[in-house]
Every structure is written in structure tokens, then in C-alpha cells.
Length: 132
Length: 132
DNA sequence: TCGCACACGTTATAGCATAACGCAATTGAT
DNA sequence: ATCAATTGCGTTATGCTATAACGTGTGCGA
Image 1: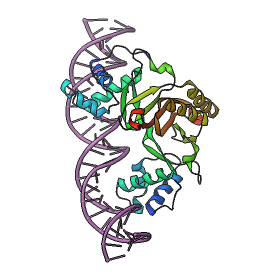
Image 2: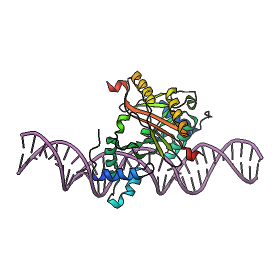
Image 3: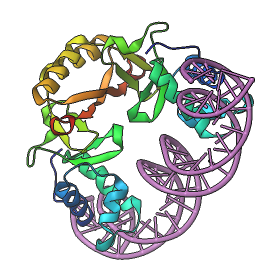
Image 4: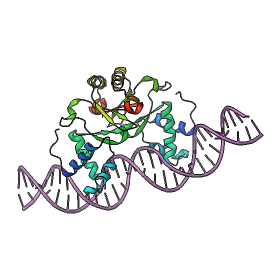
């Protein structure tokens, strides 16, 4: 699932996400792209759908927002489960991977014969700077 | 944070969730309680807010739904991080705890001096029965 | 050149969540 | 007893998130 060349809309959406210093909601992205001709949510959602598929963007389920993947170039899908720490004050997001966590969760699913498709790990709280 | 006696609305909402065989959205709960006098979403959301606080109900972030805690009686908040496996076919939910996972995530947050408030772990996929 | 796949645009609608107001009941300190 | 604070409740309105359904255009291989 490597990323083919992005279409115009996909590139615009990706660019907005990459330049942002935190996660953005689909509607925030829409507003930022109105000057580029975006008029409707679907234009954003359709681009996001592909970007998620290509693994260059992540969706943060707990805050209904999207971030550019922290590993430019690489294919994030190959790093195992992606985990996020989200600061509720400054909304900065840290992305990380922990193979031991992956392993434990996989053990559990294997034991239950549960076929995992997509796993979400999101830690909400305060980053070092904001907790001070 | 032990659960005091529930108010009428809280008890109604909790009852619906407990009798359900899967997670329910707030609006589904609302519909099930119209015969009991519920008219507006806020009645549901306010009850849910308390039930979440008491730890007798969990919110599934990835599907915007709510389930009764699988540990009746006990206080779920004391079990560490709660993880969920959600079947996307039959929508059955399995709740579990893994202290090793908790430990690894706590290690990470401690290393980053990130103050975790609420952690979400949700595995979506197919349960054994549905994967067959 | 036909058919198919895909990206795109638009309008409308569905689904999820909370703001802001006011009222009633409870509690507990003075 | 009474006042103030807290909590739950009801209602209306609104805002945010996401998708359905329709149609258009373009590129490309059979």
C-alpha cells in the first residue's frame, strides 16, 4: 500500500495537515482550503480516505481529527500498531510504536481468535510543557 | 469514585445499556427511552456523563457508542487501562485488561513526562464467529 | 469506440454532541 | 428556619462530524 502520486485535492489536504502543528478536523481543513476552491466536506473526506489508505495520514478517533504521519517517506503501515499521545492543552500529538504492546495485543487476539483489522491506541493527557 | 445510588435517568440509561447485547449510540438509547419520557439527547448525555464518571459504563471512541462495563459491581477504574475488541460484523464487544500493556504505555509516558489522563485501546475486526 | 474505474463537484441529509436558559429538590451551614 | 450552593432535570436551539445519492469529466485498456 505505497502512496502513488497524489491527486490535486489529496495533495492540498496533505499539505495542510503537514504544515499544521497539530491535528485538524475535517471541517477545519475545509476552511483552510476554501481559497483553493474547496466548497464541501466531501472533498476533504474523500481525500482523507485515500491518504489514510496510503498510510500518510492518521485519524485520531478520540478527537475526530487527522494528523500527517510522523514518518515522512516511510510507510507507516509497516511499523505495527501506531500509538498517540495527545496533549489536551496544546493539542500537540506524539506518535510512537511499541512492539511489546503490539505483541501483547496480538497474543490476546490470537487467543480469542479475533481477527484484528484496525487498532487504536490514544493517550490523552498533558504533555511535559503543559503539565508544568 | 464509587457509584452512589443512581438517579432515575441514570438508572434508565444504565438499564438499557446493560440489557443490550452490544454498544449503543446515545441516540439509540434515546429512542429506547422515549416511552419512559425521554425527549432530548441531553437527557441521555447527562446520564452517560455520570455513568462514565462512576466507571459503570465505557465509551467506545472509535464507534461513538457506549457499553455497560463488563465487571458488574466492581469499580472498573481500578483495573488499569481497559481495552476493547469490537466486532465490526456482529458488533459484540469484548472488554479486557492487560497489565503488561499498561506497563509499557506507562513506561513510555513516564519517559516523555507525559501526564496521561485517559487512555483508549480499541481493536476493531471480526470476532471468532463472524470471521469463520 | 466502448466500457470501466476513478477523481471530482454539488446538494441534501443523517448522525453525534453541547450551549444556554430556567426550574425544582436537596443539603447543610448559619 | 432560611439562605446559598449544588445537583438533577427539561427544553430549545445550535453546532460539529460524516455520508448518501446524483451527475460530470477524464484516462485507459479491451
